[in-house]
Length: 176
Image (cartoon, rainbow, N blue to C red; front, side, top):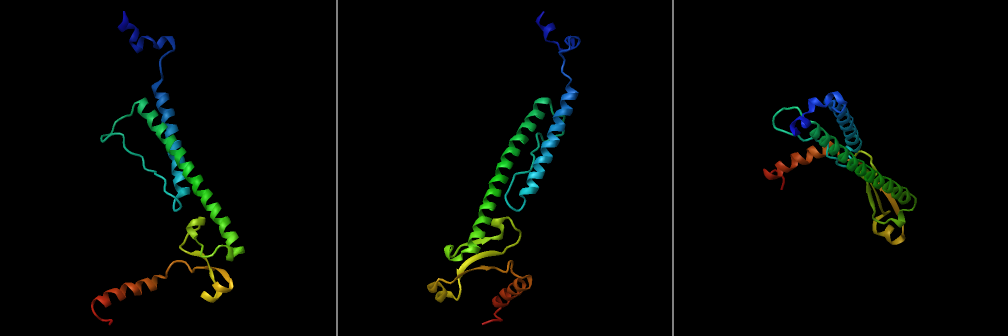
């Protein structure tokens, strides 16, 4: 009597059967939306902070995932998106605080002696920096003449190439 109660095909007439095809379609749609959202968060954070974006394989061989495995993938993606949102929000807060510090430093450089803020710290591309330093070196430091100096950014490619050529020449003994 018990095996007859456990057979799924006998319950389909009662309306209690699960439409597995619809469930699969819905889970795949949710996974697709979550993957797109994770990709968008990765793109937003690119260059500012690191967000793990890879999706690991469930098996070494191709196969159709069952409903439980699809639910696990959906849930893990949702958790990773939550972590990514927190990471992006934290980085955004740090950049906002650094921009505010830069504004204050530009207004009153004497209050921020020797502070250096890099472009990456405020969310801008490149390798420049703002540096609060004394005008005219030690004399300016003693007199309280401070200014914010903006660096010129990345070294020029020509200068780097010259340095690279100079190193082998020194090793060969051409320079003394």
